[in-house]
Length: 213
Image 1 (tube, rainbow, N blue to C red):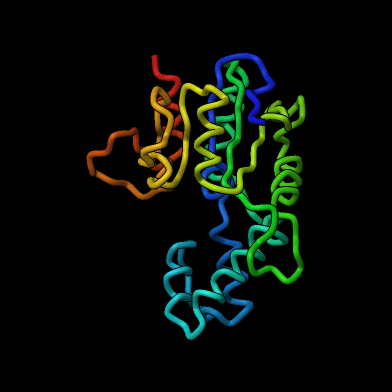
Image 2: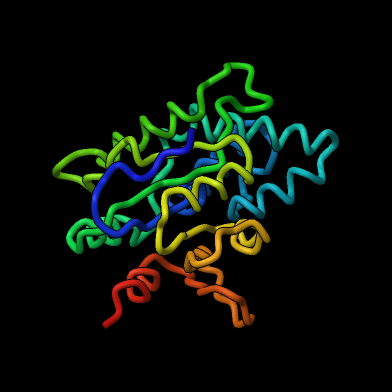
């Protein structure tokens, strides 16, 4: 049964992977150590993915790498610049944060069978997401969904006023709940395209958009 946010105050929904948590450095380190890219290579997660997929059995190699990074490797991941200040501003302004993530319980090609949801929760705890002296987010307002459809249902159910995601396909899905303002976190990729939602390349710009006078 779907649940509403547990905390009080206006609700703001945020995606997790590649929106709050940044994996680029982890992907690069692991890809180098596995010999999937040369030591001299440097690039983002997407650049690494595109390069690995060109290898023989590249798609399987990429999926195995993802399984490791989102599981054991998440301990080395970091928050995007500006996300810390944004979450603290939300708490100061009386917003409640709901994190809604499309994340299966286990990676499809992870031989270690690391529980990805537990790994994500452990990372959040380490970063101070649930502490009173941190961001003060309720662990009960973190939702992991097995499919995109279930994620969209959850966004509708928690009745958030805005939702922030790094994937255009989520925000443009016909099932995305009407009445929820959509914000695309484009991750430092500046774009001039016209979109039916707000596009912000940095968390600083997201903060300015939400808390503008």
